[in-house]
Image 1: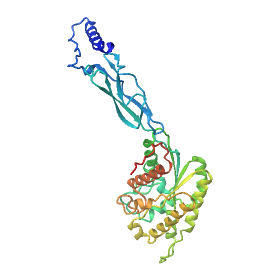
Image 2: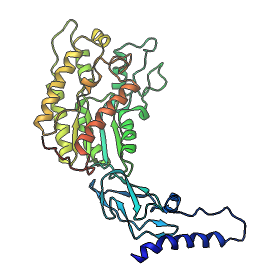
Image 3: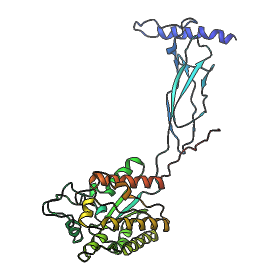
Image 4: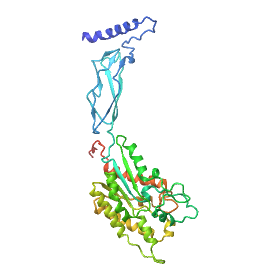
Length: 364
């Protein structure tokens, strides 16, 4: 009891001694009295920042607050030192047993979430010109028809007369996919290899895919191919022939590519073909029906081969203005960005392994 009574006097003496220690004239130091508390004398520990590695609360300890440099051993903090704090920012408030001489102080404790993490970091995009990055222009060059562009690509053309940059790798969906994954998972390094080849048919892809897998060694392969087969089959039909083309050989080739990738240890994200515009359908009647028929087989194949649902690019782009260029089937830069967003969403839903705090259900 005697120590508690002497404590205000000791504090006053300490303050007066501090005020007299300087040679230069100074303003009088406020002296706390029961009726005139000096809250500036109460000092809390510095703010604390920690990361939760498993998304669970983190136990934090801290030292005593001080009054005029003297630790306040007769006081309390709420919450108490050693409390486990959840992700977010919490406030700790400390008070002395003699509040007349020092008001409460507070400091922040910030717990940051674990770093975002994906199970896989190596990806390979396999397909034709839509994978390689042929950007659909807003208009067709003079003298170039809707049918000319796929024919030029099948012949190995890298540029189209009147289009300055037909193949734009930096605007392709694989490039945009990598650009989206990198900031979302900043502690990981991603590789998205673009193994698209303009003009390629699915059967040609079967012959090429093994070399691509060996060269890039992906954890995950995205597969988007088959339009050139449809276009060539329609082109080779007899004049006046309006019968449906067979998509079975195309589906079989896609199945072979999937199983080849699986045998190499890669997971496969099998995508539906992108849609075609009304102008493309008018130029080559039956294109839309063939694309839809192949997409039915792609969705079925994804289920049969244990791939989960197909990545439905058709549904994401069909009927959305600005997604397809003037040739009626190559995406625009905006279309490629939308494709990348769809792939990112699928990758995150399947492979994100970031620790997350368990959800607690409230009792009804």
